[in-house]
Image (cartoon, rainbow, N blue to C red; front, side):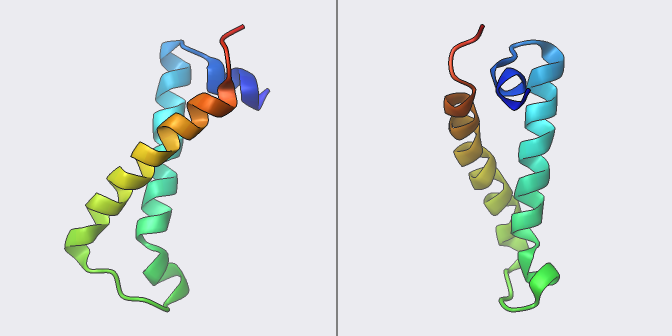
Length: 68
């Protein structure tokens, strides 16, 4: 089921993958508020979200494999 979602090229599939990547990016960018160990400057948070999304995109594509 996850592989089908990762390989889906429909508008809904692409949108849900982008939303999932954004949510994961926001969670990682706000890890300092969640855990309270390290202070991340506010101006770095959007950069962290963008970097996480840029890394997750090819990983998700590779996990999805060929479209069936």
